Image 1 (cartoon, rainbow, N blue to C red):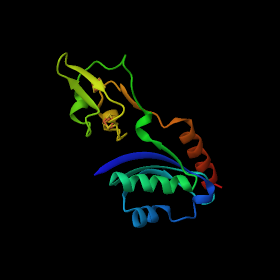
Image 2: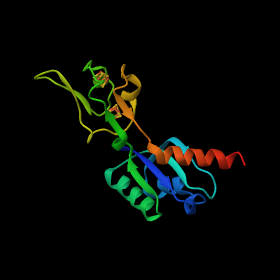
Image 3: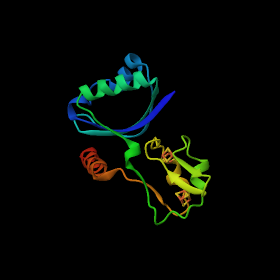
Length: 152
Ligand code: SF4
Ligand code: SF4
């Protein structure tokens, strides 16, 4: 099954629409909400894992794009700090897609950003925090606005 994790930014106009329902019902994908900040009539953000056939996932994304939803693969926010990494290899056993792997010739631990799904398991396991995931200032600004508005 094709699985990807995305960072979505929903415009105000979409908060009253049954988007998740439609993704499941009309585009035949499985969704797993990993994190979300959605309030009525406000810009919202969500980290969502989507599973399905590659084509269904593509169509689901096209549907969201048509609604003006900002879409970014979460994997693009995963980085390795090469200076911190001491090549212990602990992350290679946990990465579910082989994006962190050992090159047998020289036993170097390599990171293939193209394979990464953004699951963040390596971020949790790395003993020196060499693997990093930054949600960026957009996320924090929107979270701050949502918190301010929800305390009104
Ligand atoms: S667990 Fe951390 S230090 Fe060890 S190889 Fe992976 S990124 Fe490098
Ligand atoms: S976030 Fe880390 S563990 Fe998850 S797929 Fe990417 S490299 Fe592998």
